[in-house]
Length: 176
Image (cartoon, rainbow, N blue to C red):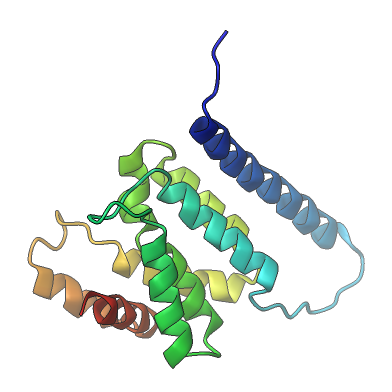
């Protein structure tokens, strides 16, 4: 019989929340698709989506520390705060800021795979238009050094995407 530490319990709780959210969203999607009513649903990123996105970021950076020893999650939260300051109405940019390092760092932490993170991200954002834009920008921000060994080339690719540019600038402002 194994005993979970408090940290293990927190990790298990984060993973369970994400899986429950995915199951609920799949159920809602099935119900909407099987409905005989043909209506257009207009959604946007909600506070519930933001909470879920932040949980995804927490899971990706679980137990990761910054150089100063603080929890790494404070970095994406700070990038989101800067993004919100300069783009208060750009909810996709604010959501992207929270997960901008998730795919790059999360799998290295060993708690979740890249595919699991992608599923959790997809489950966090209900509006398919916002999700598509955010996923495209996230792929640009995820620095794959085998594709872009030269940092300048990576930045050129990032800045070819408006949403990724906003978040990268917020990230760079934070470094200054």
